[in-house]
Image (cartoon, rainbow, N blue to C red):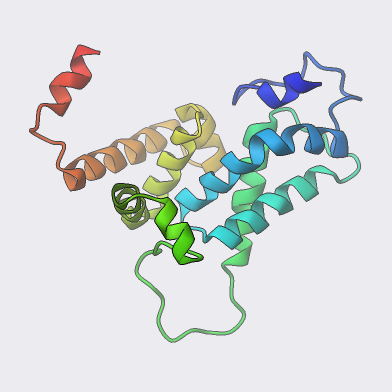
Length: 189
């Protein structure tokens, strides 16, 4: 049953017995391997640490519902967790100012210290990207293909590629990687 935790992003569950990998059993098998990556995926979307953990746990809870049949568990978990996080963002009380962009949420000084200065800078840059570019990059960083991320985001593969390209170009510029020989090194690979 440990094979379930090692599934690639787009591996269907056809090769496993459906009785062994449904509902609670599937959630238990995947929880240890997928929970940290799922939280990271949501953090890249702009969720706070506690929001990301809540949404990830909600996805695993929904996986335990009777009759839930999941063919692509990694994509399913990310889609359900992302939607759960979006539902958390709907506030019933109106706020005076809507922030222009998400900001990095450090739960504690210890959490902020765990990340180096450069990592914090990169995360803040990621959060400054428009939401569709941030989403395209988050899906790609989690190992999904352009087609898979486009389907999950509800856009065309061309739009997903364009958002990903724009996100990469923006990050290159902000990190000062353009014109520094970085492109030549990439082409040599």
